[in-house]
Length: 415
Image (cartoon, rainbow, N blue to C red; front, side, top):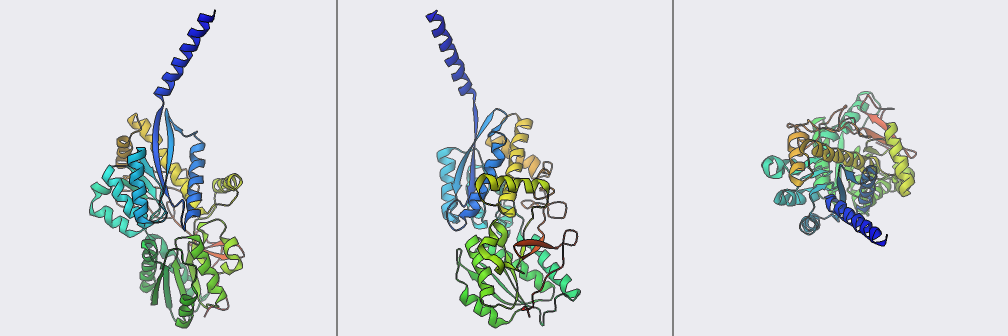
C-alpha cells in the first residue's frame, strides 16, 4: 500500500512539473512616472492597469501576463536607460504606456533598437509625429499615441471663446493674450498650438513664458502678466503641484484675466488642491459621463482610497483595455503571443484601423488609420476632449455645442 501511495505522489509531482513547464509567460514593460514630480499620475496608471488585468486574472489564453514597472522619473535620459535595462535584463516581450512627450521621444529609440512593440504612450508632442514620419519603418514599434497632438484638441478653447464673444457674453477690450507653460515638449507644443489658433482668430499674443518642471512659485510671472493687462492667459503644466499652484496664485494675486490652466483636472483631487481658487478656470478634460465611467471611478476610489482623474486613470484604463484586446486578438489570429506576432498585429490591424476599441469608458472609439497614425482619429464619435469650466468644485462642460451644459462664464473681475 505504501508503495502505491509513493507511486501516486511521484506521478502527481510529475504532472505538476509538466503543468509548470507548459505555462507560458508574456513579459510586459509598463512605462510611467512612478517617482518624481508626476508620481501621482504614475500611481493612477499602475492602479488602472492592475484593475484591467486583475479582471482576467493576468491571463490571456494559456499565457500568464507579468508586468515590469519601468520608472521614467519624468526624465528622458533616465527613462531610456531604465527601459533598455528592462529589455536586456528582464527580457520583456512588449511595452505599454507612458506619460511625457520627451520620455516618449527617448524611449522610441530603445523600442526601435530592440524591435519591441510599445503601445499607447500618452506623450502627445508633435515631435513624436515628426520622428515617425521621418522613418516609419524604424519607428513603427512605437505603436500609436494615447493622446493626439495638442493642435488637434486645443482648437476647442478658441471656438468657445469666439462663440462667447459673438454672443456678447464676453467683451474683452482688446484681444490680447499671454501664453505660459512648462518648459518641455508638451508645454511648448500646447502653448504654440493654442497661440497659432488664437492668432488665426484675430488675437494678439503679447508674451510667451516657459517655466521649469515642478515649479511652484509663480509670483514674478503673475506680476508680469498683471502688468501686461491681457484679457486671456493660457497654458499648461505637466505635474499636479505646478498646475494647482499656478491656479491658486493667479487668484491670490488678483490677476484680472480669463485663465486656461490646462491639466488642472488630471488628478481627481484637483479641488482639494485648489478649493474655490479654481472657480472660472478653463480646462479641457474628458468627463465621467457614461454609466461605465462612473462605475470605474467608484470602484477605483473604493479600492485605492482616492478618486482618479478622467484623463489619467480613466484614459489609462481604456488604453490598457485596448492593449489587452490587442493581446487577445494576436493570440486568436496568429496562434501565439511573441514580440513578433504582437508587432505583426500592430502593423496589420491596429495601425490600419482594422482593429479599434469601442468598449472604452471615456471615448466612443479609439481608432488609428494610416492617415492619422501615430495619432488617434479625433472627432465627436472618436477621441474628443470637451472644454470645461470649474465652479464650486464642479466641472461644467461649455464646448462643443452638442455636449455643453452652459455658456462660458465670465467673472466680474475679468477686463
